[in-house]
Length: 530
Image (tube, rainbow, N blue to C red; front, side, top):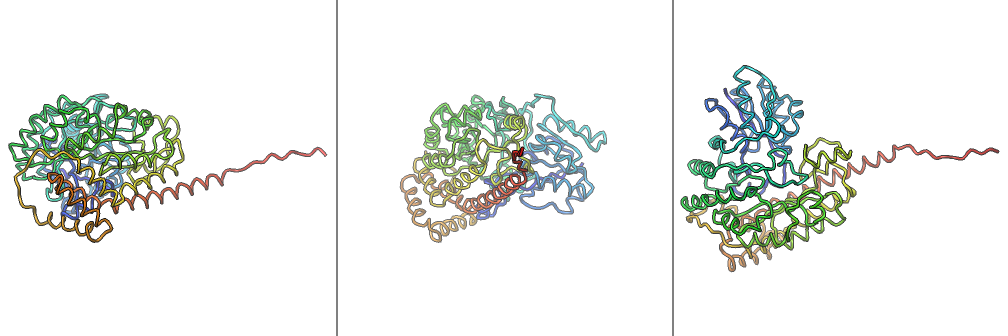
């Protein structure tokens, strides 16, 4: 069987970082870990080719070569997924799809022409698909039994050899699936459950060995939605990972995602730093405690969020934080409160979006029941309006969002936050053997210095902060200057957010005005008896 693995394109998002990747001649931040894991689970006598559409297009020769096209996608990739399904069918190919988006909304890829739906987690449903193929079937839907989740200790090493390594900035590794919390808006607990399942430490080390053997020497992102969901097991992993990193000369700088209660566990923080973790994404969502309680994110109400961020920075980890505006019951000025929190906490990089109801989440079901879901194409991004009717005017939320996003990513404000963060950041633990940086990285550094230190109005702030970091905290300098480069992305992306949200808002207000005008007005006139 010749299987062509196709990963659809992402639109421009917070995470796309095109302007930064251009500096170092790379195409994408992360590879399609799901598809290369699928390739590892499928029969290894099959032949595989992988095309990441974020790197390049599928060639005619590859369409001709394939017996079947296998695709995976998230919601944000839905438009290109539909286009690739249709293109595959035009070439006369069977099409199988899976991943978070088809699992949540299976009727949409079916409507686009998919033949097979391989839903839920592949360790369970891919063998069903293989059996159907062996029987000569040309369509089918494969689902796990209700509540059934695979034991990921049997998941094989992903087929990293299928990737075009130079195209990627970081590699992806997954330790766990699932999260113990119950946030109303989150689809992770719907897709993967609330009981975190983890791989064995030996599995993760074997995956890192494979990356090392293939010559990878850059960043590794632990893609778990909550890396510390099972603290006992993650500590067992880190005890071995820190030894592996030391024995191999700290070849990988690691990043991940975790809940804010990471700050309450000093041992866990220390183990992460010793294992060469450098950054962690944390879902703060909002500094408004009432909104956190409303959305059932209770883990963020058990202590000071700003103190937690400070603890994480001083331990040696750069925080990235997610924020959301538009929770039910939210009071006016939420955007200002988020900006104030970001500035006071000195968080350099924050994702920021209007609340969206993801399919099949508790929020989705509640809003459906209340009749508050808005009609639309279901595309969800940082550049789309809310897909439901909020409890305060949508136009107020949208304007606060655009204003706050613009202020957070003001070039001077960003550089100043970055500086304050790194000035108090603990030094990295692992020290890799010094190697002269490649020319592409030297060129990228000089480009950032030219644009931010000479060409733009940020010049005085840039040089003051740069030399101050070199003088007072030189151990974090490389990490610091790499985050300065993020300014290149956000200068453009904040304009995209402003333009697209304002255009959608204008359309929304026009539609609402038309609805108001079209409502017939009946005036009761008293009839004279004279």
